[in-house]
Image 1: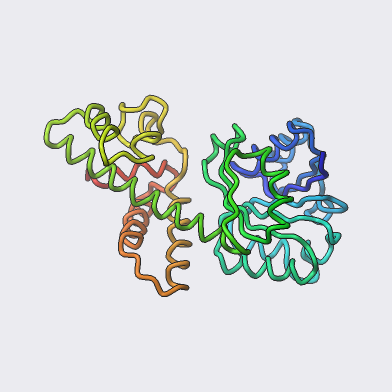
Image 2: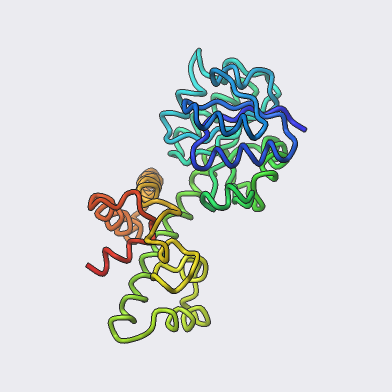
Length: 294
């Protein structure tokens, strides 16, 4: 059993923290939302009045925060957590943020002798609740060996992508590809439907052929094809368009930093930004099909 602080109890962080409690860890949480904290208290976690209080004397600090500025605000500076943690603490930031901020926090942690890994996740809310997330980790081999001990209670696939920031790069690559093959799947299904094909039959054909992909197999975007997919539930998320637009923006930053021209990624970002601006930000990202149908 480890002593764990968990900072940030949103749609992902809350279920992740609950799984740590279920695994028998001594978990103390902090979030600005009283409701989120109450849910964790009911699950058996302690609730702190501040992030600093939650992190006092712990073995691990985990965070799941909205953006890089929030991560930097929590960890950096004279009042940040890094300045207050004991040297053998391991910090695991599971937020999806820009790689530059992840590297900055990682470098600051290393200078203080604190283990740090950027550990963004893939799998969405359902996987967070089920404890089957994938973690993409960036940091030292020593930090990764410690991270595995705790991340295994929240996920089933844990990867060491490289040094600090590498987890965020891996997440950016993955979600850019996800957007591209979701759009491509929507295009193929809609083109088939306009030519009289049953989307369910066409899906079966492509699943048995070279067009097979995750969007088609697990998350079919055409209503009525897959009973439990958001498309068959009025595109209730799921993974929101707002989040996909955010992640594509981060992917574009990664591409820009390495002077890489990624035309498919850029087009995917443009399409999702247009879909978001049309008032679909809170809908599931597979609703991009409806933009193609307009």
